Length: 192
Length: 192
Image (tube, rainbow over all chains, first blue to last red; front, side):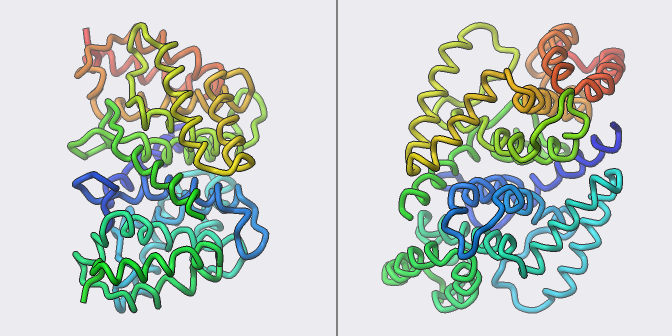
């Protein structure tokens, strides 16, 4: 049992990994643990609108573990340029270490889900990635572009970076979001 | 799609519902969103040790929604005396409202999971309740009894309140925890 407790105490550190977006109405940045919870429920509610049929429980599990590597590396904004491969290698070392607390037959499925999310090649992973990419933009749309403005992220860069993965995994979601993003541009909610 | 976005923005408020325990090493109280994430993963890793065979994906989904009612009511410490029925009735009104943003065939399953957790009568719900009750005590064991000391909660009260549900859902977990709690008592980590 100590192994499981060590594992969940290690997970606890994800509550201290901050992202660039703020929860609505709160004067602090969100952390990767609460973000993971929120997108798991968004995915569970939207799964019937995925581009291809998905296994909801696999998608939920994937989203619950997808950011665990940040426990060692911290969060990087999706618009960061360069260093992505080194970063992903470091996250992979982190998840191997963290899931390594568990007995092999318990840790290996979590590690496989993490890798599947990162590879983005299955229907489940594409949908999970779509939801993960959509959520900070949805928060920004409700937050007057808070993290776009703070980080100088232009409309074109947002659309180029999140449009293809959201559209690939959940076209209905992207069809909803693009006009909202265009309205946000007119309102000056993006960086230069 | 607007209905799903309204739903997830409503969920966002759970990030602002604070509990009595602090994440390890952080000088703030944890919130119910990150707590829900953490216990979902603890349950997923421990499910094979449940008292009866459980459906992991149902347990995970149950834990992801179990605190959503606190969006309207706030968190109440499990040791609060009295007012429990009124509180649960208020939470039920809250979850009906929040899941009511979704189309009926999407919202109803979430509501059913929430009610099943509260009723605690199925194997899945008993295991989910065990994990939910265990987690703050595990954090306190790692935190020198922070919330027990801050709220004046005695050893006997903790054992009486969390022992039966943890033992009913996951006896191996309670068998591990009880000796740890006894050591914590010797170290003076409980309130009077």
